[in-house]
Length: 310
Ligand SMILES: Nc1ncnc2c1ncn2[C@@H]1O[C@H](COP(=O)(O)OP(=O)(O)OP(=O)(O)O)[C@@H](O)[C@H]1O
Ligand SMILES: [Mg+2]
Image 1 (cartoon, protein in one colour):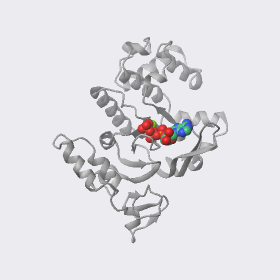
Image 2: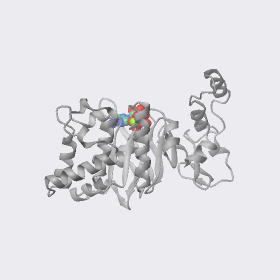
Image 3: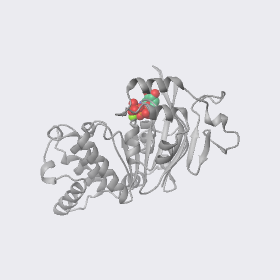
Image 4: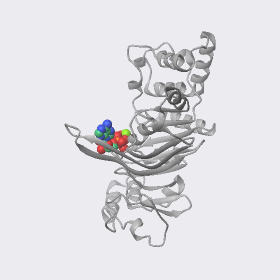
């Protein structure tokens, strides 16, 4: 459904835009209907840049992003872009920034109505809006007619998802959507994603939190400095991490039965192990460079490709 193929993103930076910053290098993966793909990496690893390119909020420097076979950066006509957003929507970290504080929350639904459903009668619109809001386990009577500050972050986040669901949504780009929520609301939003996935929605779930990635996703894509260092079925990646970086990320997740000192000793023992790409002589080398570990499990090198270490 969504396919990224050797995607690069270079930003122009500096006072006069003369310097270049490579935020994403050679990234390729797919998101299929009813599948959740997590993009996991530390701050600055290029996760949001990828999400923004998928949503056409940032241009692709080279490579391609296709949705249902169509290159998303080539949607020249308004009609085609409108169709794209009917199927692909994004929800972001800070739900408050998606609402204008001086308007009631209903306004984000009204804007959708004028763009996509101009002919719908008031009673029909209210019925559909109510239905969608109930899907995200909110009570329309409790949330509609309120200003954003009168609702919680979790309620606003779910309202944005409800709004997206009113379209013929096939792919949701969820960029750190639960990092601002408290633990109990997080579970509600995560479980909602699980329900949507069961209904056939594809989700690109952007997170810096490994535990969240494990909880929700079918496939995990681990990013470091804009490159994929490892990707594969979440169970495989987390049970048998191949890349030293994935291993160090996993070791740094706080665990109740291990103290900080134990984890620290383990991390400093192997700060950056041998690069599996450069030591894998007999495995298939793919662009990136990525090597196939087994079926759908790939590991790559985020180094400069010249040494034996990643
Ligand atoms: N509009 C922009 N112009 C220039 N550089 C940018 C722009 N947006 C992002 N960057 C840079 O690109 C790199 C990747 O940023 P990105 O926001 O994609 O990271 P991220 O993985 O989402 O990080 P975080 O977890 O902090 O959200 C960073 O070095 C960032 O400073
Ligand atoms: Mg980000």
